[in-house]
Length: 124
Image 1 (cartoon, rainbow, N blue to C red):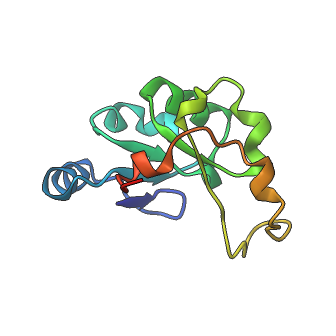
Image 2: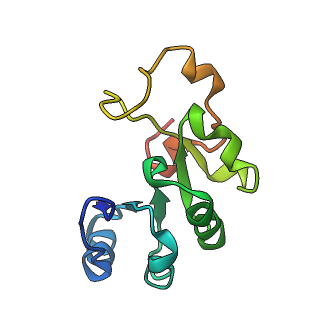
């Protein structure tokens, strides 16, 4: 379940917890003001932070919460302090707001260490 706080959405912790309870889904958050939501996010059993809203303060929050972080190659330099096992590949395809188009070579420079199949509970 994804909450887009960057574009005016509201973080509904009760809904996120209920969805997790019923179907086991994690919560994904897209926000540029992650520190403001840290206390509420701490309640979530499975959290992923979207790379599009990432900044240094948000990355620090994600690290403190033990959250997964989706990252694109253009964010690789920002991830130095993050546990590599918490980094998932992310893309903003079709890249409508990106300064450049996604290139297949980006996959080779993606800062990915986490097992996405395990995170998404997909059998290997």
